[in-house]
Length: 102
Image 1 (cartoon, rainbow, N blue to C red):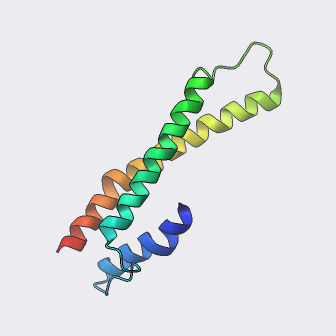
Image 2 (tube, rainbow, N blue to C red):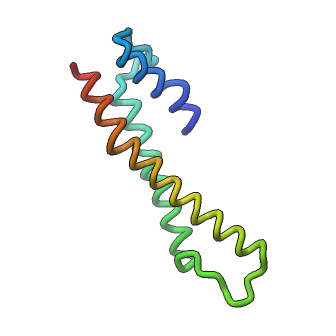
């Protein structure tokens, strides 16, 4: 996912901002963004499942340090992911699609 963003989506957005030709490998930016948003949805569902299976990252009374570290890291990852998805899906991508449409 990150490789696609770094090699395709972000360079295409940069090219649009700089009024250069779109070099997105034959796909429109809207198509590339659609793929990214689908992946965001997929990983979001996976993390919802992890959260559900872990009872919202609730540690058992006898949780060892490794167990605690794992749950803390998963929760931090989920929070970072939500921010990443929000910034792209709700701010960057709509602006890029609007720019492509001009």
